[in-house]
Image (cartoon, rainbow, N blue to C red):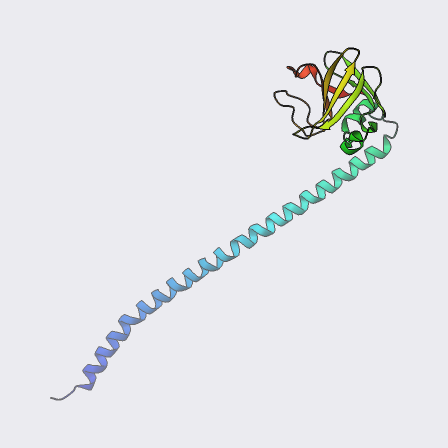
Length: 197
C-alpha cells in the first residue's frame, strides 16, 4: 500500500490547527487563574498595612491625650487632696499577728472597733481597755482567734476574723479585719465589728 505524503501532511496540519486554539485557551485560563491567586495572596498584606497605619494613628492619639492629661495635672496643683477617710479606704488592713496575740501582745488590734448597732470595743497593746479582761486566747479551727472575756460575774466570747476569712452565715466585708462578740453567735451583719480608728 502506498503512502500519500501530501495527505499525511494535510491531516497533520488539521490536527495542529485544532490544537492551537485549545492550547491558547488553556494558557489564557491558567494565566488568569494565576493572577487571581496572586491577588488573593497580596490582599491580606494590604489589610495589614491599613490596620498598622490605623493602629499607629490610634497610638499617636493616645499619646496626645496622655500628654494633655499630664499638662492638666501639672497646671492644677491647687486641687484638693482626697480626704483622710478616702485614703484609709484604699489602705490595706493591718495584718493581724496571731502569734503575738497568743503571747499576750494585742498591738495589731489596737484601736476602736464598732458594729452597725453602735456598740464598741477598744483595745490597747495589753488587751481590752474597758470591756472586761481577756482570760484565754486560742486559735479557732478555721483561722479565727478566739478570746474568753471575763466581765464582772459573767463573761462572753470574742472571735477575731482576719481579712479574707468568711464569717459563716453572715455577709461581711472580707477585705477588712472583723470581730464578733457576745454570749451567742451573731445573727446579722450589723453585729460584726470593724476597726474605725
